[in-house]
Length: 269
Image 1 (cartoon, rainbow, N blue to C red):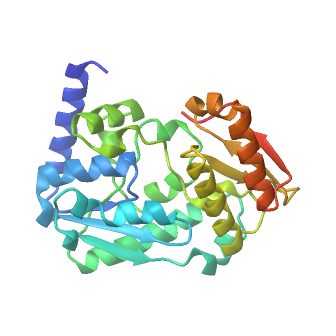
Image 2: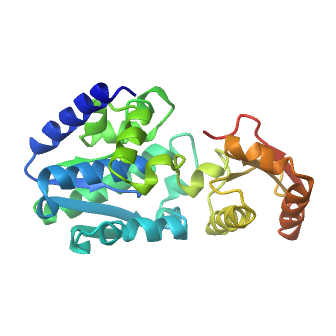
């Protein structure tokens, strides 16, 4: 990304943010929302930014810890953070896991954000959607539009590569993190979402991380409970080609009742 282009987009983003007196940020702790939060803090000051994080069974324990401690880790007062406890397993339309699951979940979650922030005198909710997200199949964007959530990264023309470049320039540790998504995305459409399945996915992905395969997604299969498919980072294909590591992976899954492990050759970037 040419420096002059990134500088122009950064200026546009700062100008957009300064156009609001106070903003609330839908925060996940990922690369996009971390950049948006940092830029909002720089443009408006901590006293004019409210950070909203949804704690639930859909978020990995490690990711929840990083998100809830982001402000303190970056030298800001944690008083600007509000953690909302949500219970998606109580939502029948979510548990049913239809094609509109993501839309229904985001609509519920952002509606709760709107209610909470208005009680604290904030009236503009923003999230970290970037221009590449608009090109992908993201049902949750429908909820973003319906609820009037602002997307300043989109308005300033930030693609994912821009987000990473500016994050690196600002010294954010998230700059090269793979895209994150909730644990429910590993469950095939139509398969009921249960706490047991979510915990199993987190356990399996944590085990792979300990074997050296960080950021791997373990996807369940609709027709077999003892088969999973792995989405690994493209840099990790050489790792799994190692016979000793491959055997360790196989034994790990067998220990947890998985008899066949499939590998998505597309990988993760």
